[in-house]
Image (cartoon, rainbow, N blue to C red; front, side, top):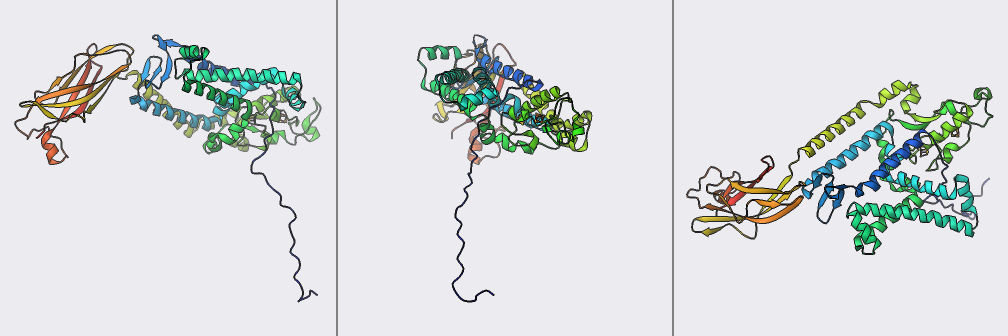
Length: 490
Ligand code: SF4
Ligand code: SF4
């Protein structure tokens, strides 16, 4: 029987509390080299994207750099097109196109962008290739890192970092070359006459490339990239994803070549871990779809090599859909469902937008005009019975050829353009801002029909709608009509 009175039992004290780290300690990943169909694809895309990135700023067009984003002059040159701040709509369209393409590709086949074209993947692949050439493949690199520092190790590491540094610096130089004429920028860099901003951006971009592709690698995809977090909402059960065929592969286990796995009670997975060793993010695809997977397909190539050696059919790890695996679709049915209503709608919107943008660019009016009423000079009586209004006019010739323009105004009887030397001459891709004076005889009658509606009585009595017409002398189709107002002071 328990005692009713007496001292209470001692409260047990927890001797130690286990601390759980908030962040996982990074284990360095040593991806093994892999060859195969998808590796070839990835390298083809790396060559293509880098040829474009490193090559474009060196092309010339009409005697100038073909692609130049001249922020100082607020003009973007892209081959024969010159974009001005007024063309910001095209930037908006470009962003919409990029977002729609990302939706489409992700809906069709998951993280295609991440696996094949994202700069993080591309530069990590290039840096890993350099590392492999200098330090050797996976096992050699593991051994080298574990070995104590010797002169030989120091030389190897120094060589690798020098090569990385050269690529990173050239990447930073190329990046700045899109914003500052690349040839002059190169001369300035060699002669140490770089401006502070150019030097900063070249070193910053180079440093970011070196750090992200040389050291951070999969950490960028796992912890920094927002796309990795929300891409799964664009997946559905008919999206192609890289998947381990569990029913075929399990139970996994090693065996000699030539034996029939089912006789040993085994599946096709020989548990060689090649799929893990080639993975740049260090995950095991056999554990199912994971957010760390960037969809690079290296595990498909690695596993197919093993299947080939064992004499098994390829595709134990492959692109397939959740529905295809669960319902056993043949590849024809699977592909038919991949191109479902959702992807067709995305494709149709994308194509329509591309067509509209191309048409708009092809028929773009190279003349742009901004007209502002000059707030410093109000309407005044310039001479007895003559009223004068002053405007600030900016004419932009976005063409690659010089042009001359006439300026006319209409809307008030006797309206005349003054103070402008006609025609106005503008060089290629040039703009001019100047003052335009309009004069008109004072009206006898304030009940003119052109009075603007919906304004207060005073304004209605004194303001007239007018229209400026700016026209190219050599081409009647290059014309702009701009609305404005003319004020008669009381
Ligand atoms: S699991 Fe496969 S596809 Fe995903 S990141 Fe690793 S190697 Fe690439
Ligand atoms: S590479 Fe293929 S066979 Fe080897 S462990 Fe991975 S899934 Fe199994």
